[in-house]
Image 1: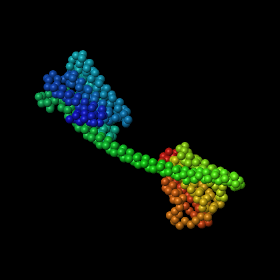
Image 2: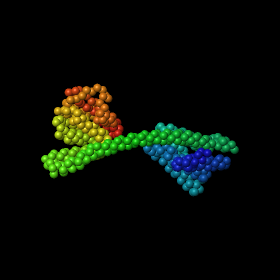
Image 3: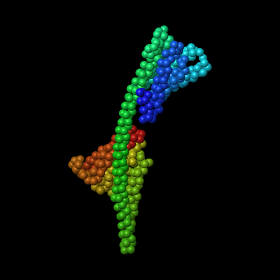
Image 4: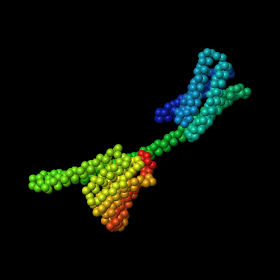
Length: 448
């Protein structure tokens, strides 16, 4: 039944370990049948009947091969793996010696002595292997160790019983008193242990499959979140292209038509219109640079971000009455992912736009630094300020957009202001190696 179970398992799972074990069981059954017939003879000596010796050696070679596949000791203990290979070779060499002696018609007592000596030597190697295999500390291997130990004890007992004084008394008509019974009991015990070990192995495989499926589901969820964030980035870029560049290009078209008419009727006004066209064109170029920079995978460092921010701030305040003061010195090689880089840039740009539109400030101070693994980005002005009544008191689209970007960056945005004393917008975010790639820093941060 065990051989049939192993064979059916091979048909279902297509793993060599099962057909080898099935063939091992079949060989042991044939070997025991030969042993039973041999013990019925008055002149029986161990190893004298060559077919029995051949089948027995083949069975043990298959068993050691099965053990190597079952335990897979090579990654954990290469020496144990080499000893097991040596044991398999030992059975092959013993079979070759038995074959040569049988073909040379060597007397039976000599063949029996050689047979007993080689089998006891091989069993000794097996007993050395058992403790080493047990040290692998694997519950499945423990069952194999127990089964192998029962098989070795049965084999040694069967071999030694032939040379005990009462061995002739055991060789009676009662088959249950044959020395081979000890081997048969060992084989039955080994088969039971193998069955329990394989059941445990199947259960662990099922648990690993469940864990793997859970990991796949989690990975799919992460991929869905990343796809949503990529979609949000595409939507933002599409909105920027439509609102900023689209509107500016349309303005260029209208202004060019106006300038063409003015050149015929009012040449003096045409010069101002052409200058406006130039400013609008420069603004379009600057916006395109920002979009291309945010999509450039090579521009991932915080230092590169500071260069881009410095250029944008200077363009914004170039023709403004507000004096710009920059402090964007980043020494460490902090890295930013594409989406975090874009959100951080647009949030800071919105802060500076608010200064231009609402503050009426003489000075604006833009600073960025890293302190104790925390990024601080501050935009402060000395403008007219306003009264902060509560966290939700200012519900403009610009402020809501900045708060959403701060949340997406896993950071905190604070706004402080008083009438006549200016406004300060401060964003801070902790920089750690554990922050996911979907947040402000990727796992590739090397400065932490």
